[in-house]
Image (cartoon, rainbow, N blue to C red; front, side, top):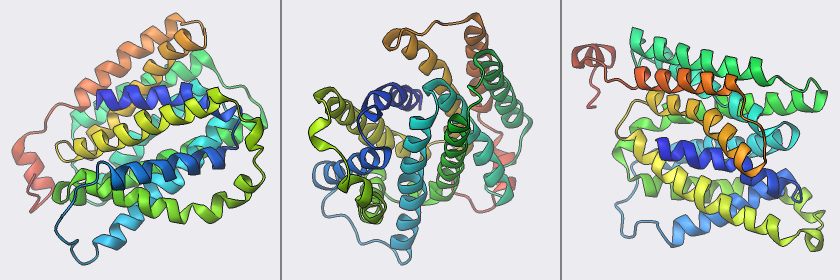
Length: 294
């Protein structure tokens, strides 16, 4: 999960370079389409057992939440706001995830989980207060897109956990990207038709390739595997690492200055992730989720 956080943090930096030349929807579709090809023809499991009744509809729903809505809103938001603000707002994922899991009775709101997420959220707020928002209408729209992206991804984490525990993570992710590549085509067709393809420099294509290989194919597969072995709220809690990693990566690649407030926030966020990731007592888990095999 920490490796996924690093890859997703790299996504902010690398995607920024690509979005200087690509329309966000064009970038999103090329990312999804290429990932779908890789996942279905390179790493997809062959000779797998047939899907259970209803699985196709479930996977289609996961694709819409975690790929279509997630990718479109994220890249559009990132094009409108700054990388570090986007990384900070992504930390709303664990809040949405825990709330959804508690509402449907899948997880119990233990003191450790709530306290850890609250501590990590406080660290994210410290980053917001220290860095600040630009205050423009454009950045506000981008911020709202990122929050919508976070909500969609949180709902995916909660809804997909039973399926991830039953099916192969590679199979689920491959099917999700295949469905998303079809659903996103009419959404992305217009900007792709008007894209100035000849004016796109080589560094933008390299950025697209890196985003596909790391923050997409590798990160989605590892994140899906993590859902088989940890509560969805714990997986989501590692999202709090992204602002920390992004600040340091931005300093290295974008030459942004690391402020002391970011170091303080890093301590709070790491502590919150540790506390929220501590296993709950078996009795409490069983009582909260009757019949849950985990």
